[in-house]
Image 1: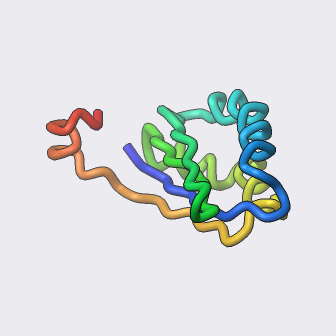
Image 2: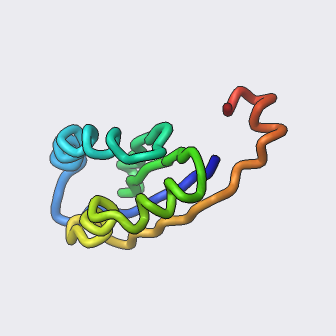
Length: 100
């Protein structure tokens, strides 16, 4: 499994407006091949938002990062200072802590 963590700040839209867009986009994210789950993040006090994505494998993560959906989010002018960082999962202790 692979994890992708994306963070960004909002510019020109409120959290409420952002959440409305998230609700509209959620089905598109749910349809990503190889996506196990996406957790939508919000830290309104620090204007930091994003997502934690869990993918079945590296190919699924790579496919998402090459997709039009990823490019559309990355190119959205209301989402600034974006970062996308992939991670490997350390499977042994993750199983013990009920991560898989």
